[in-house]
Image 1: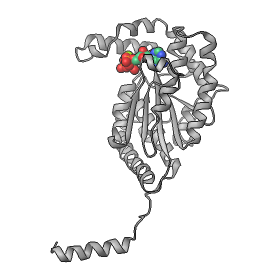
Image 2: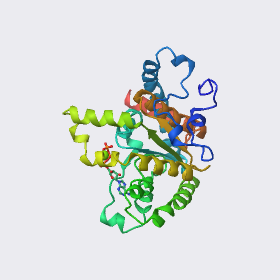
Image 3: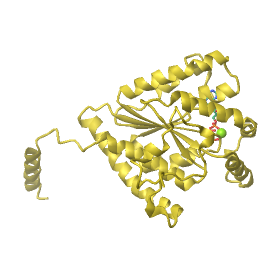
Image 4: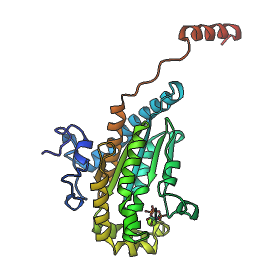
Amino acid sequence: MGDDLDMARSLADLLRFDPATGDLAAIDPRGTPGLPKAAREDPKVWARAQLPILGGELFAEQEKLVAAAKTAGSRQRVLLLIQAMDCGGKDGTIKHVVGEFNPQGVQIVAFGKPTEEELAHDFLWRIEKALPGPGQVGVFNRSHYEDVLTVRVNSLVPARTWRARYNKINKFEAAVVGSGCELIKVMLHISYAEQRGRLSDRLQDPTKYWKYNPSDLDERRKWPAYQDAYNDALVKCSTDAAPWYVVPADRKWYRDWAVATLLLERFRALGLAYPPPDFDLDVERERLAQEAKVNGT
Ligand code: ATP
Ligand code: MG
């Protein structure tokens, strides 16, 4: 069992897309790589039970990130970038995983069709503006990758324009990482059949009609072109500075566990610690004691 987390060094190692050998079509969207032995009996129940535990740890890590920025002037921040086909589970992942953080320190940005103003600028303009500040956890729901995905599939710009973007993206991301931002790029990988099921749910359930967009079906017809575009983006933009992680996402419980685990692994690698006081602890304790004497409590 090479894909068991008890054996592998990390989930990141298992899910990291290797640009030399990687092939999106070879990754099973129903797969559950990396679940530890403890999960074997009932993986779904196990993964769902893990989520609040991971969430508690994520919350504590985020607090240390905020504290470091506030008291020690640290430039560190974290950006989770999520891409997926329609119905891929971006919203669900954000709700279940990102929802575990303290909302005060989280900045979620969704990128839809560019506005007139955005179109008048370079494609990275709106992205750069939305980067998280020091101490923040940023989440991108879609991203600059749309400019080599939907834009490419629908020929919204000439081919030479989108072809030039992979390099620009790599340079941009290297600069972002160089400035102290941990960048975690996650593709939620669902199957064609799973997308159909989820679209069907949206058409059957009155509480989900609002999530359905008739154009989703037009895009679905272009599935092979999208998969090719995704594969190219993964191959061309999985760099050492900013690798891609492909998370099998047909099973929602696995998807949530995997994204939470990827985030936690990255936070732990930062080795964050609560900063020491930037005031004299003894003096302040004594002042509080004196103040309590004066006021009687
Ligand atoms: P849901 O999955 O819940 O439907 P969503 O992410 O699809 O949410 P929408 O507002 O429905 O959100 O769709 C956003 C749309 O904007 C997508 O169709 C996406 O392809 C499109 N989009 C994003 N960035 C660009 C871009 N740079 N150029 C053209 N279209 C873009
Ligand atoms: Mg949509």
